[in-house]
Image (cartoon, rainbow, N blue to C red; front, side):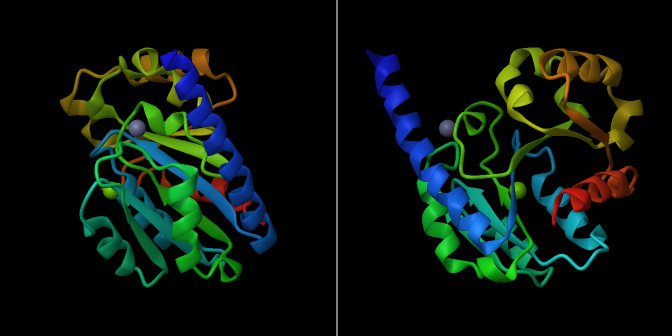
Length: 214
Ligand code: MG
Ligand code: ZN
């Protein structure tokens, strides 16, 4: 019975996600749904991405957090349009929240919309919001056991950004094991090894992203 209820919630969500997708297509904006555990570096990746996109792409951001506006303020500092969603406890963004939030964005003036999901490796992967692709970040300090413990997010994502590689010498994390297990779950996963701190690997990520945005 419980499973049936969950299925209906997801079906209702998917219908709104399809509507969002139409709105995004009509506006000509490419949308990524950025997911990770808390503290992996979602907002930092957004900052370095906006700063490193060399082609003249107009970028907007939706910030999802349970509470607070810290991340939206950081992004606002980049001089781009941003909307903050406070979920008030919910541990993921759903299509309806996005449907409401985008009314406050100049969608037609954007080429790329980055949706920063709530920090959580579990249910954000289950809820479509109308995105073109899901991208996940795993910081290497989270440990090399995460792909096999949280397989759905690795399976749903088109790209995996391995962040904080500058900290590799200080951890026991086996980055080859992370890559091997991630690819065993999702053979087409694009993997980027980056450090927002040193800038290493960022241009590979932003170059690939730019190539996807018309
Ligand atoms: Mg953040
Ligand atoms: Zn959730």
